[in-house]
Length: 471
Image 1 (spheres, rainbow, N blue to C red):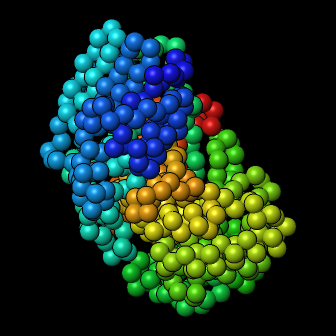
Image 2: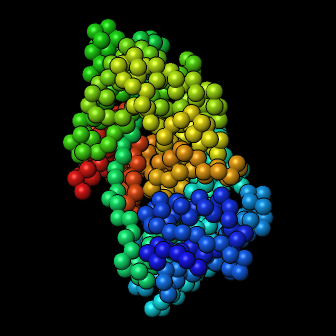
Image 3: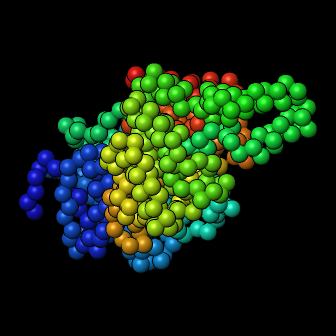
């Protein structure tokens, strides 16, 4: 066997020479750990394990997931973790970031370390493939009224793992094992990033549709029983709709968002719904209106990103998303910007299935930041890092990059979801942020422009993003 002694050599049984294996090896070893490697397939190799070798040392890793996956003809087999999950105690054997017992999606609670070899019982590669491709969401049927895969149907809920980046934990374990045997290996140590995005569902709260103002006035009197609120509604509506002074509109938080993120040197993106078909669920604005054009120009001039917020019905409709993308491109060009400005975005209501990634990929978008649970913050994909999506149905890697959504303010605060007050929301968001940054991933924070209704909202937002751009 001739190979470059400086590279890791991956040894596998020849039955594993498949698109799925090549994808996950490339994603974990090259994408996450930034290692160079070469693969050797052999019919004599043990099909229960994967070997990572260099010179006279090796790491042996469980490969049981893919053995079953291939034997059961891929996605037809419905390979799921057995619960309750076993756990691996690493202790001081390896200096990993996760200081608790590691839950095992696939594999066994085994870790043996010697001078020239390490045995890892966790199926690192199979577990990562299971989480990154969202196989579970194909196998299971539990969806909510918006056709979103429900957290309560997930292994992440059953085992209380949603707030832990299980894939990042596994990859860190593997990376530390590699450094244990080969200290000269350069493992990725990229700094983490805080990425803030704003889904512009409603451009402004007070608009010229008078019925909305009348309903608000009625609520002030009949429900709030507040003459003060009634007068304030009248004053704000008059100032906005008659005088055209939008600074009194509570949804007009764009400059505040930009100013706050600029202060902390944090990346900020605004995602716009390009078509609403006059349906309430898709917002209240026309993408080609002068207000939107002026806002887009202002955002771009200040160095922030403009992206696409796919409408409610576009998540499984290629032609719908194609038309919406073109509408936004037209507006960008009308604003004097190139279509190259548009790189990615997110689906409205976080609606997603396997077809969604294929649709975004075919439409030439670079990234999608939809994949997060609406009802709970955390790691739907098991990672805080960006990665190329693999279409398990058509068995191919896509160009589209998944940028997992980790935290949405609605998930934290809304009564339908976690229903936290601001005091208890902050430590949860802060812990998620720390985990993302510790593992060199992205803490993606979604905060709608319409979610600054109380001073506590401003305070929470500022606390979450504070100083992260200065790490």
